Image (cartoon, rainbow, N blue to C red; front, top):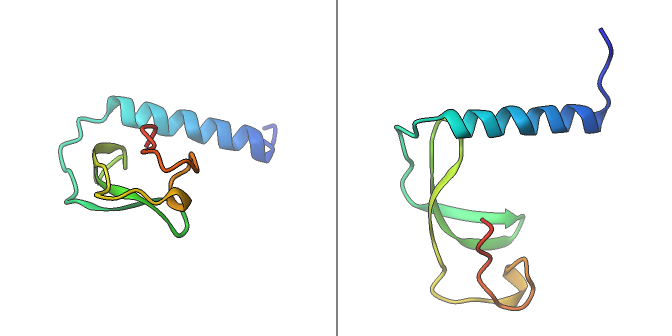
Length: 80
């Protein structure tokens, strides 16, 4: 069996997670919880599937602080 390097393993796991999320029925959804797109960078509140961890619903924050949004321009990041 050929060993995978880090990049090959990461891509394989990303594909497996994508397949899991695409095939999941999202039967159990979390309550609203804080979402951080990076440590210390709050991006609003989300509800996620408790099985596959896909974001099911998101709330824009009441206020936007440029240093906490990935665009760095004080815009809401729709890619969450």
